[in-house]
Amino acid sequence: MSSLHRAWIVAGPIAVLASWAGCADNTINAVPTPRDGGRGGDASAGGDGGDSDGGGACPPCVTNDDCNGGVCAQLGGDSYCAPACPNGDECGGGRACAPVTSVSGEQVSACVAGSEVCSVTGAPDAGPPADHCGSLVGPDVQAACSSCGARPCQTNGCYGGWWCNTATSRCQAPPASCGGGGSALDAGPPVTGTVTATGGAVSRLLFAVVGDTRPATLDDTAGYPTAIITKIFSTIDAMPSRPPFVVSTGDYVFASTRGTQASAQLDLYLGARARYSGVTFPALGNHECTGATASNCGPGTADGSTSNYLSFLSKMLGPIGQTLPYYAVTLRATDASWTAKLVFVAGNAWTDAQAAWLDQTMATATTYTFVLRHEPAGASTAPGVPPSETIIARYPYTLALVGHTHTYARSGGREVIIGNGGAPITGGKNYGFGLLNQRPDGAIQVDMVDVDTGLADPVFRFAVKADGSAAP
Image 1: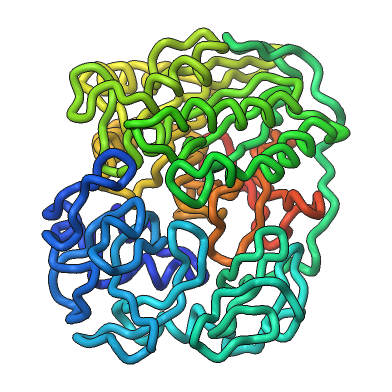
Image 2 (image 1 turned 90 degrees about the vertical axis):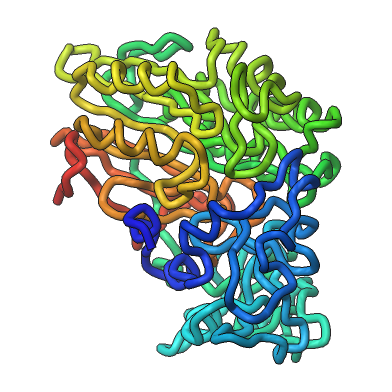
């Protein structure tokens, strides 16, 4: 396991799945990459998918079609093929049959390495938390989920100790903690000053972070999570201290590059975004290229300028005057006490030109630096992740804000995963958004807000100084 993958070892069910032995870097990189929304890959070439012997590779995937009869599951920091085990006795070679979340958000059974997976994704050893946690309800609560199939079915319609998300009627891993129901968020007094598409000056830093928003199924525009993302942006806009800007971490579509659904799905996203009256700065995701994590788009790249990529440039970046998928926005204090920059890295549009730009941009000194990129450090198959990590590490920065995995978590000291903006959820968390708030002492406090309750998760809350070191 590389240091990049070790960075993904975080608390909770995701941590164990991140250490899945079948997902070593050398095997992932050795298999063909799915193209065009997952329709072009062949997982059988990687020796996995329907293979239950535990040997062979662990191919990355976009849909179940990439997995030769297996399951495209959200494991660790990415989505990989795993052999299905609908009866519970199909696994071999050291693998165990465990409930996992598929890329479409369904609870399914798959063979994963390590028997500890089952104990973590099932009911916690210390006993389950309360039966309700936001929109999540426990195994013994009547609900409308229906993922148990032939397995012993719980009252909520799930199995294996999983909880039902009543907002989506999908099963997911039990929450590690409900934080005592959450707490009201005090974001301080209203921010004065102005932020436009070119930056601006404000009395203090206060901004929201919205993660992955896409339908569960390829080209299912009718199933776009419009209600969820509309509520997220409406909630942000209605805050007593409204953030003057929002950043988003990518993946706004799930569409084939041969069709026209990317444009239609972006229109739905923009309709929801119109509920927020401030400016929004978006990052490029892998689904704005071909859908594969390993895809690379733009002029002179392996995948070229796909329809998804061009729609993103036109609809998402055009309104803020950006012509490239990587860019930076500078901010300053109205009293000149600090400066800040937002650095948007396009990990799926990586070129030598972007590398040179990133090095130069990071070298420009500011009090605060926030790096925005879709994939976390652990998703090392994305073309721009390893090289951008190398460049970023040379310079001081405050936080790296990423998505890609449909949950929220803190990975290591300075990477924050925020991917719960409407895409199929995983990890026992609910939909919502992040909020970064500059405290009077200059530290940046990070909160996660549940969109159903409007409450912050007190278990997650933390703060860092401008250099990224821990703040009290």
